[in-house]
Image (cartoon, rainbow, N blue to C red; front, top):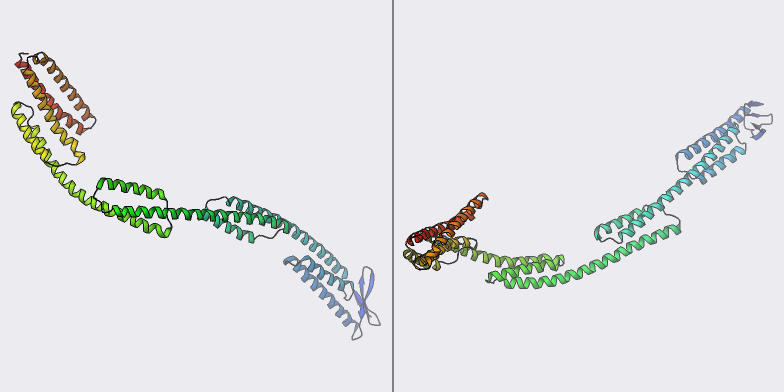
Length: 409
């Protein structure tokens, strides 16, 4: 008979394994020595140890399902319970019991994880639905449309919920997308109609602009072009394939007109600049008549100057007040000199001569004050204008003083 701590072989070749419940028959061995019999069944035990170790590793390191793990544990447990191996079978049972506990714990963990994932998926889908419903009211057609497509991709990547919940949320999600698509379709249909209206309006504006391009009625035509531009802007945009062509025709017609006007105005401006030069020379000649000493000669000279002035054409509009003002100053001086002469020769004028002299002196003093104020303010053009007027007033004052002297005043 042969034995070891976990088993023995009796004289008949029967192999036993020692357990907590006593010895259990493992099998019968007739092919060799008792030592070989024990070694054979010990190898079977080692095989079970290896098999349990591999299963423990799979449970610990892979996603082996609880069901498959339980089947594998049951298969090994059957072999252990059959006592077909020599070794510490209780140790194997203990490892299998712990492995069952581990599998159950993993199953509960996975169940909790799935529940957590399901709750997260539910919240994520509810958030997608809420955002989709908000986007359904947006007028940012491109951005909202792109965002809705991104939400669909996100939805597809989320786990499914229970059928009822998933179907309800998908119905709301799908309804929001449909509502947005319907609004967008209606918007662009309306926009197409507006652009078609704009195209018809702009074609009419182009036709009128092209008809006006050859006009030489500069002022009214330029004003009408400004009105056409305002109507063009108010009409809105036509379809993209028509807008640029219509605008090029519209702008081209205006360019033809304004180029022709600019050419004519350039010639006119050159002519008016020359006229201004001539009138400034005449104004300077007229100003040399001041102060007026010989009224008759001054009157004749100014008449000659004025006849030459009238023969000259227009001057630039912005220069007209200045150059005409110089002539008016001399003309007023002549008129006031004539009035002074009349008063001097009029029996009633003597009584007013002294008063006139005082008034003219006051006017001279006032003008000197205004000139000083204008120069202090840096208004050179006003100061020069007032100085020319002052020269006339001083000439009148001199005439008045002479007249007063002639009256014996």
